[in-house]
Length: 353
Image (cartoon, rainbow, N blue to C red; front, side, top):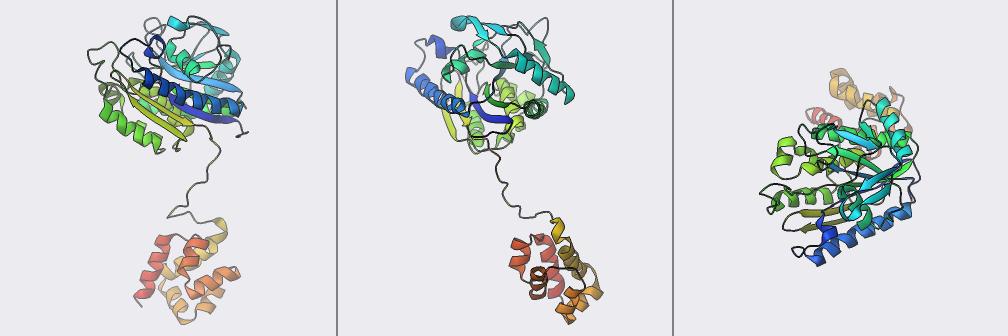
């Protein structure tokens, strides 16, 4: 279990209203598969025993369409009225909302906040399908997806980064359900024509851990492919960065492309070693000795004449001196992490003599 403050679990989940109404047009077995995948993620989230549950989704031209249309908004009330088959009061963790709002203001973001905005099923379906009890308090965060001008993908990503920092600075452990998309065109003649080809590529990139691929879709591309709701996913990309998920499901329907992607272990990962690493401070003298051979003809001549004497000019550890004198390229590259391009230049200079 991840015990540090910050985002400890994250998921991308759909919220199609048909999940609740189940009209005859729906594939009941498909809905059951999506529900099972989301419930499995919810079970793992609950095992993390986080302090805060965030549902990050898009406003559907409900409250935020005429009198105020903020790019981002945080619910800071204590309850919110649901809609449709989810009507009635839903408990809101408004105290956490205010805490994050204050941190975001300090970090240079100024999202709107609301005390009484209603909740569409875009927020409540993820909770039910992930197995959360209706009594579970949560924090809704809205992104404007449908009313131009919407926040740019770059702004969504930056907001996600700031939101993750705000969670850390608030000292809480959070799980995040980002709900939106994939492609669909509600309210338009293209509703029965989701862009499965584009969405399959998006899903494959997400399943491989390449969340920044979402940033290749500008506002026009999001609109054209029916993926305006992917702004919530772009925010999540800013929150957790590129990371391979531990579960992924792709389910195309006649009106939506459902994707369920889960990250239920967000412990810090070790970075893969770079082919061209930075020079460690303790290896700076070794790098300087090598660069002198590359850069200075006199130093190169001294090295060729007497390697031991040349190496003695520098304050090198015994193992560094041995690797330099013997030109042990594997040790210089792998053990001491000398940049391979510097070693390549060394070999080229010496080979010319």
